[in-house]
Length: 295
Image (cartoon, rainbow, N blue to C red; front, side, top):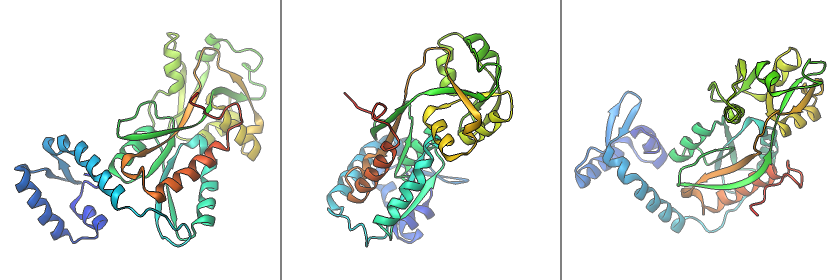
């Protein structure tokens, strides 16, 4: 179910492919169902397998918690942690990596490209341990921890005609750069605009906020980015010093960055330790007033 492949499942289980195939045969006989059907890219679960999976997954998570080591020797255990982190907090990635290298020198960290959909799917499949992003909706199998809040601002080059005054009408008429890692045509700002019965004039779509900053600083296009990302860009001298920001000319919500992980690794000591480092590094990017509090 996690690997969608007999070969990859065998490698993950440290078993031979024939042994996994034999086990699958026994499972098919036990359930009187094919369970998995061969497809071009591997195997696809049947409807019966999909129906059984939620309960099987919960049972497996309970078994893992029972047999998992109750302590984690940070300096001597070779393990791999897999993390996806949203582009607007990408500066935290290097700090996380250096912390892991210092505190667990034999551990390895693998970063993945984050989108809300791809990270959720990878966590479900077990190919990702945790992710940091906005995640507007999550399945019940996910655990979540609020990290920090932020808000979107509109950015433009210094001297832009909208710098002095920007109305809702002039905002939607201007040419926009949309930042969306998934490549979709709409972003969170467009959802807020739709509540005003408005759509903005998107003329360019990029995958990273840094690309938007560079494009906007050398053109008459404008873009919407998290305020914290712009502050970091100005600090790092990556083009942010040539930009100015303005509040959005309509009512908008704050955004909440979340740390998300699956129930299967919830109690594992190594993953608990790793998530604490990720959370600590991300939360340190927040000022006192922006630090998330559930109260």
